[in-house]
Image 1: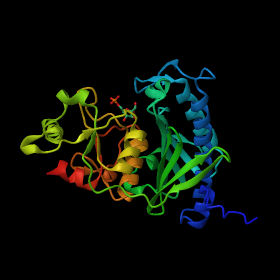
Image 2 (image 1 turned 180 degrees about the horizontal axis):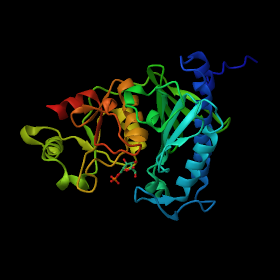
Image 3 (image 1 turned 180 degrees about the vertical axis):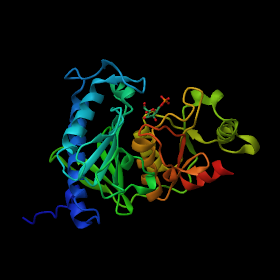
Image 4 (image 1 turned 90 degrees about the vertical axis):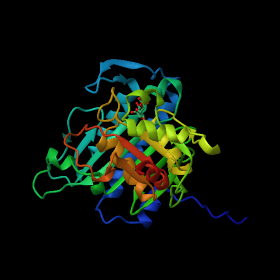
Length: 322
Ligand code: P6P
């Protein structure tokens, strides 16, 4: 009996076949992907193990902290702290940057569980991460964490949905891996991902329309216009950034979180939401801007700095810039 050639390429094999110029980056990926496997498993069992619901904590962002937020954050911190090359961590759930090892080389920024308000409704949620290299030679400091997204050496997200999918911007390309739960391995399923140049899909919380900048309001209204027999854009909004970005990466279109009265700087945080997603989208041939400025050129002043973001197909961003 001829054994059918196993076509599976695991993430470990992919990283081995595409060595990074950054030493021990594969170790960081091993810990991040282990964390994603743990989180994926807990999310799937949340209803069975009473993991839904909130803690009694409101965090410093003023957001309700869900039980799974705490679990996901502890998982990321525990697994990444085991690597001596990791110098500092920045988590959405922690007030300040955490110096793990002053002699470490890398800073890992992450939103351990983004979209957690959707958890109890079984809507797709995700983890987002980015990896920077320290800037100086001395001890790693909190300033090493305040870098523009252009300096990211890799970034990615894990989408917890009907399947668990890891998408990474690594070595100049975007690659997707699907968790095969039979073997507990992320297997290559999306090679060299590129975002379509244009797609008439827009993704924004229209509930904030009245408090947007007039230019943004006019732009979004223009997308819905049927003047002269135009076909309007379709609106798709899940309210979970990882899911909305994943759809935009695959199908094309434009995801937006503009500044509004309730979020004067925008809602999404730069270091562990906008910058990693912008690196992924630009590496896949798309674009990302924070108003007039390319998103990857923003230099954050604080670890939780919020920015407005317009991200997706280059043709859709161009339409916004006209
Ligand atoms: P709104 C989820 O809470 C999140 O941080 C992102 O995942 C998502 O894109 C955004 O907020 C949704 O915000 O104001 O539309 O509910």
